[in-house]
Image (cartoon, rainbow, N blue to C red; front, side, top):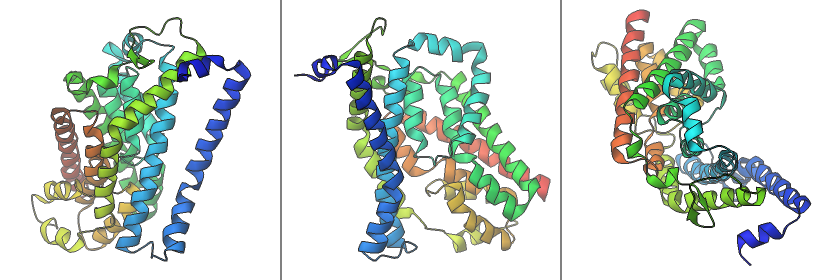
Length: 350
């Protein structure tokens, strides 16, 4: 019996009980993910979770499972929801004259979803597949790792209200403006075609009108399976690269080549930050240490923004759904914004 036949054979009660049980299992796995790897790597194997080896292994396994779960949950939900609404209607609502408003809304959503750059990729894929304009979705992809409540609280505690407001304002401006610019460039041709396809029973369908609930659930399952098949090698490679460079902090190199007095310090800071991988909370201790050594705040904020918004693992993950031309354009637009903010902060705070 095929998946479709098994779904249609279910009564409504069995269908909803099955979905509820699946949701409970998903939530339980998400909740125990970190404690399990803490116990296995730090307890069973006795590795120091603060060491390069221990933290790297923990990062690889924890993030791989976390992002896989996010892909499953987010893509399934968005696929079922978009089955009630055509791609054309979604684009009409969020595109055109309202695109600027959409960039603001997407950036605000990114602020309240404290994802790292790789964790934001599943939501990005789901939004693009649902027909949300590419530029609007880019605003979310930039804002989610760049500005979050944990980073805001830590920056406020370390540096006070002034730098905190500058950080939040600059992050939102970069996300909104960069997303708007990318949207104006009409780069959808550089998104892999499978992202825009709606499938049912393995076949691409043009309309979701008249679908049953069983059809919509099947679409969600098929979409999750299809995207996981396509993205899992990139997921493992991206997280593997992140694990390899996790915790690496080029403090001495940074102070030597991006220190005070170097007119290219902000640019160098951004170039150093892009290959690294961390969330804002993870990179702040290094930022604090470098600040104590006298490095300008604008240079440090540019470095932190490059680390959390333009990480190499994120680009590897995005490669399966975006073509190299779009990834390069995305990096270029965001990097220019970050460099500009860094020099502006140094001028204002210097």
